[in-house]
Amino acid sequence: MSKVTLMPGPCKLKTVIEAEKLDRRNVTIKIMTECANYKPLEQELNQVNTFEEVLGKLGSGKVYEMCSKYSKHPSCPLPCAILKAVEVAAGMALPVDVNITVEK
Image (tube, rainbow, N blue to C red; front, side, top):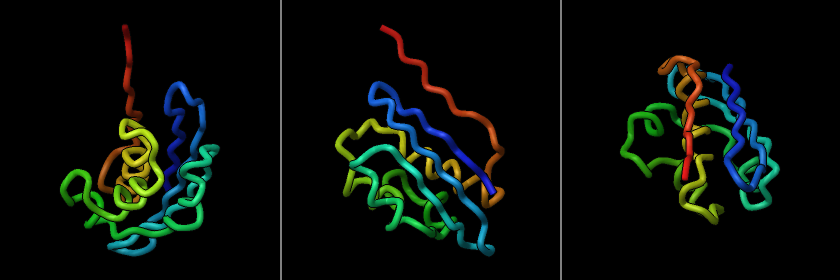
């Protein structure tokens, strides 16, 4: 199992994603978010095909498709955080933190 905690920025709306390998191709996802826009994902995005998500083109796949239905900000890092949780749960990536530093 993998767990990713996302603090996306100025909105301060925390999201926790838990992902667990179901079988060779599939990962189950549990999303707990404070973001009202993404709240439907808690019920709608419960499982993905790892290979379609992780090896597909950027912006394709079920994660990006579903997130685009609810996202109000294209720069929101939630889709990437979900994919990181999926990769780690599937054993396709190491559990290493990702960091974006913003300066002005």
